[in-house]
Amino acid sequence: MSTAKKNNIFPGFGLSLGYTIIYLSIIVLIPLSAVIFKTTSLTFPAFIDAVTAPRVMASYRLSFGMALFAGVINTFFGLLLAWALVRYTFIGKNLVDALVDLPFALPTAVTGIALASLYSKNGWIGQYIEPLGIKIAFTPWGVLVALIFIGLPFVVRTVQPILEEIEIELEEASASLGASRWQTFRRVVLPILSPALLTGFALAFARAVGEYGSVIFIAGNIPMVSEITPLIIITKLEQYDYAGATAIATVMLVISLLLLLAINGLQAWTAKRTGRVR
Amino acid sequence: MSNVTRFERSSATRDSVLVKSIILILSLGFFGIFLLLPLFSVFAEALHKGFVYYLKAIAEPDTWSAIKLTLLAAGVAVPLNLVFGVAASWAIAKFDFRGKHVLITLIDIPFSVSPVIAGLIYVLVFGAQGWFGSWLGDHDIRIIFAIPGIILATVFVTFPFVARELIPLMEAQGREEEEAATVLGASGWQTFWHVTLPNIKWGLLYGVILCNARAMGEFGAVSVVSGHIRGYTNTIPLQVEILYNEYNFVAAFAVASLLALLALLTLAAKTYVEWHLKSETNAPPAIEGPL
Image (cartoon, rainbow over all chains, first blue to last red; front, side, top):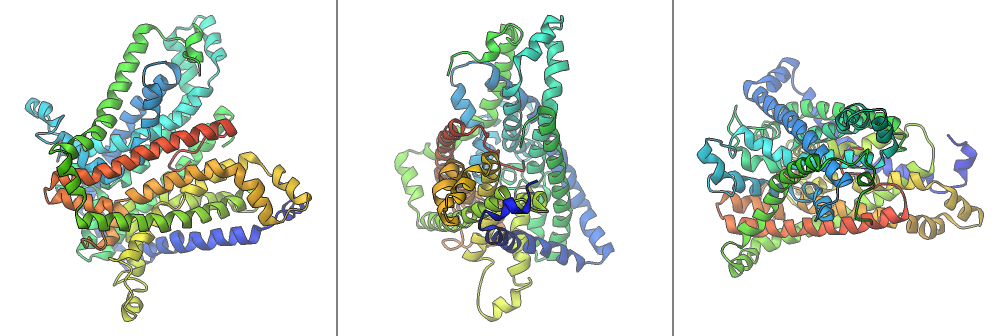
């Protein structure tokens, strides 16, 4: 921490911090507080009823369950992809590296209709898997496919820089002590990567829980079966049930903020583990 | 760049051909099926009735008004969040004060909130039943189900992009250069224009590119506040949804292909800027999402 005297030689502290706080309050904090105020207009039993109705509970199971499942799949394949991009040479590597961020750049509505048409009965993928008895479009598995798409870059982009910085000497030392490649990976490389893997998983999970656009086209949105929680909020809004919509939003908001804090903690841990300054 | 990665040069870190093949097949296969195929399908579906039909689908008047509204929303949201990003990163990187970490976490909130909730909060504030609903109604001002609501929702979802690129970059660059300029008699604005801005220009551009991509592609948040009034409150992504739900698939994919092209342009620009960022600083660019 520097002294107050050091701060004084720079101009613009009051202006820049003041503007930051006012703009943050107007755009983010005050509107968000409306959620809390609106929720308090419900009595506590009414709030509990709204957020634990069977259809809402089914949507939590779907949203959180599939977000978890997609997060696990992305952690595994994200690690493989990051490994390939950092350690191997192959044709088109730079192109693959750039396109990993596609889910960040492609608008969710575009993803949604593309996935829905790919996996529908006559789609490029659907026409081969439906005869095998596998239905993905308009079932809960459609939700999973969409969440895999949007979550993959979080894992790759969190793991990749850590993997790039690993010193070869560590693995050489391990090999010279007689460890096999697999033992070295399990005992040396994986512990270095694990905070980053966990962070990438958490980022993908957090994004997947609230995802809307890429999911609704392929999910079919059948109540109790393939209806995600954000869609329930929209449905309630369209029925002018503002208090009900807000109650469910409060639950999601609290979970999102807890995840944000957990991710910040994980990143501090990653930084400490790898000696990186964030 | 050398042809072989440093890991392939040491026998201790070189994987066997078998392991390498398995990892490449699994990872690239996964990448191809889950990421590339959806991208290709957008263009294939858009063009499958031919190029003339494609152009006709895009030239619809409702599509044009959607394009105009999207440009307007991004045209307001990007500059606003750019100014905010510069102000916030200047305060955070150049000064020490209590509560800095809390402030950084608060700036990240829009990234961790579901887009649906981003729309909902403005309905609660400005909607007919909201805080200012009756006052706005008395003065005949419409925000929700009108253009101002679309702009507000867009500003919210793109809020942290520039700030989150600039804060780590400016923190990594330290304060010495600005201190030297100040000691030599430069004013605050001179220091900012001639010292700080040239140092952060690539980071700034990076943030603006990501901010713009999200502003033009946002769906969930604007969907809540738009009311879907054709030719008036539809952005490009909402127009895609309407066409798709009307089973007008070729037109839906034609309009979607414009957004997919924008995404590819964004990735190309981003890769180019990353290359500059890497050569000028050693700070890796932040990834999108809470860091």
